Image 1 (tube, one colour):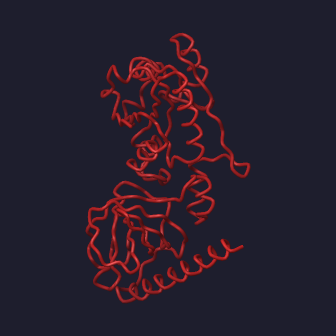
Image 2 (cartoon, helix red, strand yellow; image 1 turned 45 degrees about the vertical axis):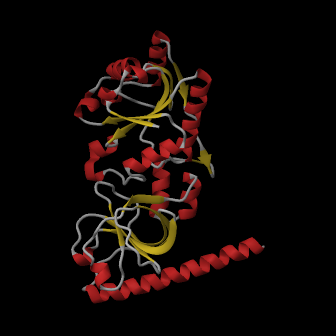
Image 3 (cartoon, one colour; image 1 turned 60 degrees about the vertical axis):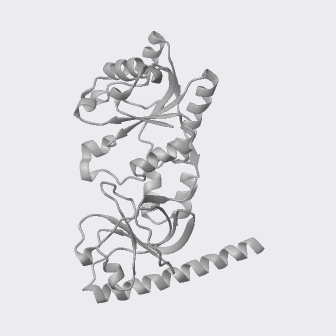
Length: 318
């Protein structure tokens, strides 16, 4: 898969494609159905498939820190789109220039001159251009004038409700990981490289593997049972997602204490699968109180894994 950053990096070889456009936050089952539409049409037309995304996402540009948390970091989203079999991802920087682009300029600069789109898959409520002046009817008219076709996306329902990033986010925030897995088509995970921290966990006997979130605002916050994967290893553990108020933290960090693990994994890519919510993050009166709570969390998490393993075994027998 090829990642193209910005309109200015489009070349003649990128002209002629079947495309769709959106945030694709989470790349959930609804997104996957849209991508399947795009891939099927691309195969029929003998053209590459293209997903057009934005960075930052438009709501982040307009709302800043008040925007909803993301489901996926940028690199995770690109990896998921690649795993879906999309040939190219075009990432547009959502800035003042793009925000002020007229609907006609959107058609001319992106769809015609940039990509020479031959087929475009969008929702019938899709709006584009400055002040959202462009709509599906305008796209159809442009397609008739310039020789490309436009197709509705197919709404995907689970339990009689539309699958959306908002629904997945709300499901995660209430700790319903079974339903989030159903909506995503996979477990909810956060992936990042393990980095050096302040080593406070190691000082109090609870060493952690740390992933800095940077600008990524995770929909989860608190302490969870998790399963971590790195290289060819899979290790159970307990994780905290938050700012670590007891040690006066300011930036969000994903910390994972790996059970019975003593090797260094700095610099390795770690995927953390969230399984069960244990408690909210809170400020403690010093490191001794924090240490006591962490050992309680570890014991609670170990019991959860034991109970979950027992339930799984009984289900297999039955």
